[in-house]
Amino acid sequence: MQEMENRKLIIGLYALFFGGFGIHKFLLGEEYKQAGVIMLCIATLGGVITCGVASIVIWIISIIEAVIYITKTPEDFKKIYIDNTRQWF
Image (tube, rainbow, N blue to C red; front, side, top):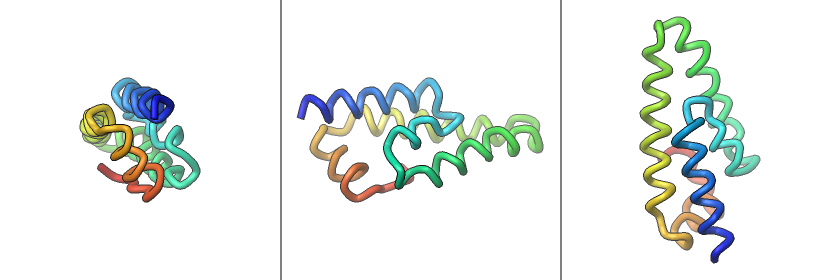
């Protein structure tokens, strides 16, 4: 379980610092690739079109996800995000 604890912490920190680009979604695995691309496109293209508003919304979502990832127990994290591939929150 120590490996899962480390993985959730790393993914949580990536969500906190680089979440606006959806990097943490790519780290979760192949099943999350579409969600990562959506976050990346909204943050970049949507950010340009809306003068940064879309980017701020994506950053807020990623901060919420970071807190959720970090506060989950390793067992819950594995069950929810690795086994069941829950893509959002």
